[in-house]
Amino acid sequence: MKITSGITIFLLAFLLPYKSGSQEKSLESFLSDSSMFYASVSLCIADATSGQTILDHNSGKSLIPGSVVKLISSASALELLGPYHTFKTSLGYTGIFNKRTGRLAGNIVIKGGGDPALGSKNFADHYGDFLMSWIEEIKKLGIKRIDGKIITDDSYYDYQPVPPKWLWEDPGNYYGAGVYGLSVFDNTYEIHFKTSSRGTPAVITKVVPGECGSDLSNRLLAEGNTDKGYVFAAPYSKNGWIAGTIPVNRDEFILKASITDPPLLLAEILCRKLDSAGIIISGTPTTTRLENPALDEETFLIDETVSPPLKDIIEILNHESVNLYAEHLVKELGKLFRDKGSTSSGIEVIKQYLDDSGISSAGLFIEDGSGLSPLNALNSREFVNFLLHMKKNGKYFTELISSLPDAGKEGTLKNYFKDPVFDSNLKAKSGSMTRIRSYAGYFTTLSGKEVVFSIIINNYTGTTRKIISGIEEILKETILHK
Image 1 (spheres, rainbow, N blue to C red):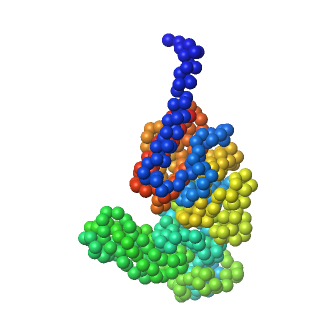
Image 2: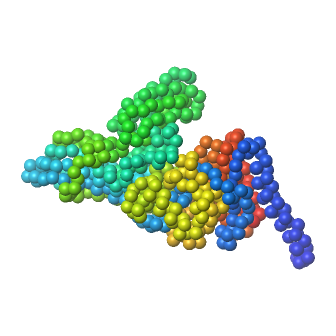
Image 3: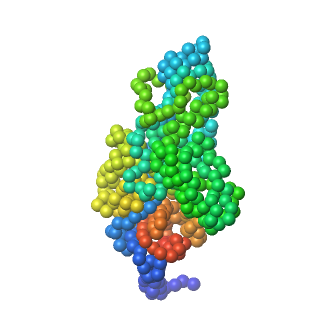
């Protein structure tokens, strides 16, 4: 049956206000919930084509964003370095090598080139057993005895691994691992525990790799069923402590801690493996930071290990929210564009890129590349402007958006936004810290309108699940009614 034009106009006049009103009602309901009584919210949803605002609440208010900062650092790196930028780690030797006797009167030198993923389990297929490959190349050369040392040259970046504005509880744990000119194994090691009844000490059963067995005072207790254990240790230190609680009655429970001196660890591991392979080494493994040995003499290349392309690293970075990779990219930007591999110089490069892109930095306070610092602050209005710029003008927007996890399916969004309305429709970066939740990304409404959004919430009470449910309802209403 045909509907007359008059009836159509009537229906549209009746339905459209309801659609807009229902969306605002979801926001109003969310903000009026008791869990939001002390909270601050900055929210902006905009049409990705026109840039017109669809929904706004305090979008100019700058709040602590958490890991959505990674969208800025990864996008800036993609645009400035290109998706196929790689990092190189070289293995070489100095001194005089006697091929007849197999004696090297000199040092084996591993020179870092800022690779964030060397030996990472995230790229196991790419790197394989790179240490055994190095050893095979050394043996192939004919080296049987080294009258010298294994030296790692980690001078590619500065010697300040951790951004100065991080909390003290972070750097000793895997998510707070520092950035070094020569990083390895995600700068992470495992501490294995066995626990028994409530209140009893957690017993360390092993450490992997074993060379990471630094002098940590163990104050960890068994309690409840959740992980509240922390490692407190500073970069380059050999001492620290483990505190808090881990679940009771576990035959094995693993805490992941940050390697405090990855360059030295790599030198020690290679030294041990060479010894096991029958190659004699007279000296003790060391690093340029510790001894500052003269490495200005000619180095003869033995082997070179090249990282995956930047786009692959960024895909893991944003899917799994890897702080280490984001911080590496900041230092790489500083190294290549300011000739200084430091966090501060990298942030300068990012801010310059934002200024050149027309993004106002007046309400953007960036202290690191990962969002781990509680002194970062962003507002949703400029973040949306940034996302709009990337979609309209980004040379590598395809690589950027493919690095974001699909709602309800993968990465940090695997357990959220599982309503069918989000299926294959929403790609976003999440951010979470204590009493902080944020999301930013892209989706398409049922009418086919492409949308960008940013929402940052600080100091909510109640459960995180309840907060996420409220966010889901706001975005769901936008998808259904815009």
